Image 1 (cartoon, helix red, strand yellow):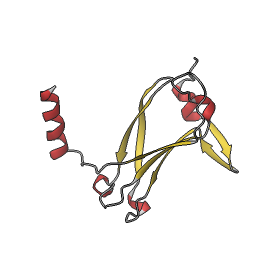
Image 2 (cartoon, helix red, strand yellow):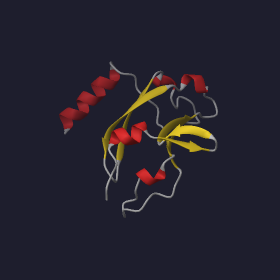
Image 3 (cartoon, helix red, strand yellow):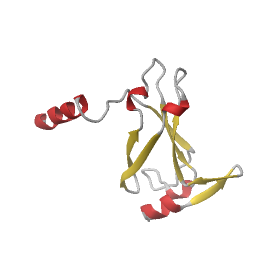
Image 4 (cartoon, one colour):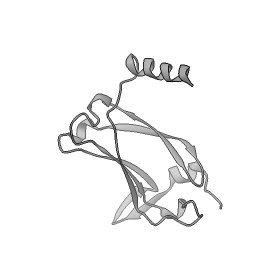
Length: 122
């Protein structure tokens, strides 16, 4: 199965419902108690194969992500489905994938200590 180069996926735009959108789009769905303005983020694709895409997401205000009883949702939109395949090599049929986002830790301090402790255990 031929996989297009990552730069092609990043550069491709498609028209969907009269809007021009990226081939792959990440959106944060706000929980009931959250304000969308507090959920800004950036991301990088750290790994990409025919069967898997790995994202590194950096939230501008990580302590506000899923901080309440109703967590935020990560929505990955496959706007150009012909770029993405199932494990059987067929073009995916779903338009999007949704996953709940757990509470976040800030960089530095406890997050680094926790990560270092995990590395020493492996």
